[in-house]
Amino acid sequence: MEKNRMFSFILLFVTVCILFGCNNPETSPTQKNDGEEQKEEPEQSKAEILPIEISENSFQKIVGWVDEENILYLHKVAEQTHLTKYNVFTGQSKTIYKSDQLVIDAIISPSSERVLIHTAPLTYSATVTIIDMEGNPLVTQDIPSKEIYYNWNGSNHDLLFIVGFAEDWSYQTYILNTSKKELVPIQAPEPFIKWYTLDSYLYQDWGEDTISIAAPIFSRNIDNQEKSKIVDSSIHFQKFKKELLSVFMKNQENGNGTYQFFSEVGEVTAEYTVPLISRYSDWLIPYYDMIEESGVFLTLVAKSSGTVDTYNDKFTLTSWNVKTQKENKVLEDLDNEPLSCSKNYCLFGFQFEKIINLKEKVIVPLVQLKKG
Image (cartoon, rainbow, N blue to C red; front, side, top):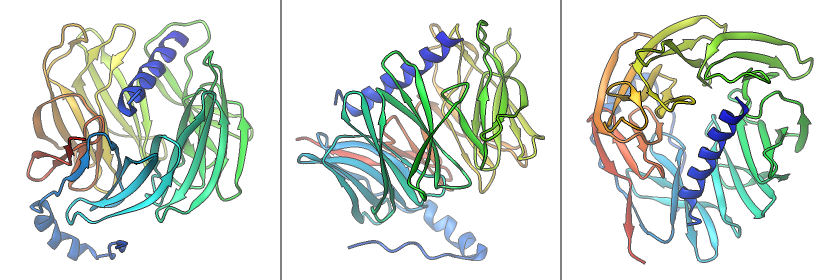
């Protein structure tokens, strides 16, 4: 399984390389009560999206949603990389952070109040800077590494896992505490761990000498190392703020995968079965996202099961409410590309350069590239 995990990580690394190319201040939206939100939803769903007009040599990527109206995006200005906040309905923008280094990636915290900036000033060193939404640096930390992986705690935005990979793919796991400005090394059985609670994480136990496409999911306490099995067998998992998603093969012969959702106390709350595509050594999990406030899971779904070599069809964007168990087809004939969703819209594409209106069920460009 070590081979499988390294294969998955290398795929992720290649994707990052492709994306980045070996290539008047706004006020925060006022809080509204539920009644006001209900009145504004139909109006906002018909609001015109104003695309970012930018040079094709300057644009890097959309980072993600700050709130229901604003996104962050990365772009080059002269010899710097800028992180800019942009209102997709008014066109107003404000640069909140500038770096003299090429920004490899930027990640918005689950609370939408902070941003992780990843730069690589040296070949075998990464620099992680955490800023607030005004661009004020909170902590900067160098990580000895060729590549890094990070995972933000969904309950406490002061805590992150950061994993530094050496050239031989050996790794060291750290906890970065931004309030204490501390980087503490810890021992972890797998590099791609995910926060579970404030003092525990989730990981898959693939075993040392076995080769498998599925493995159990365990939680492990950071302090005393006690572990507990959460899921017996899973081919993929993700931890959202409130729920745990695990995918398993109920019937491997027919190629159907079941998306299973667990509550915070470990109870199965919902199941959703879809056809999956085999990659021989594992299964392709199409891109997805969760709108947790409404309990809506959005995922791209293959039209039939098959193998990655023979599947030539497109995917259908489907919304599935984990509370009511109701399914709704949003858009058909889409490519399998990343999603990042707010209540009414999804960013879509490998650079999030498109936007999907979930109510109107249309897709429009969010970036208008200009020559030069």
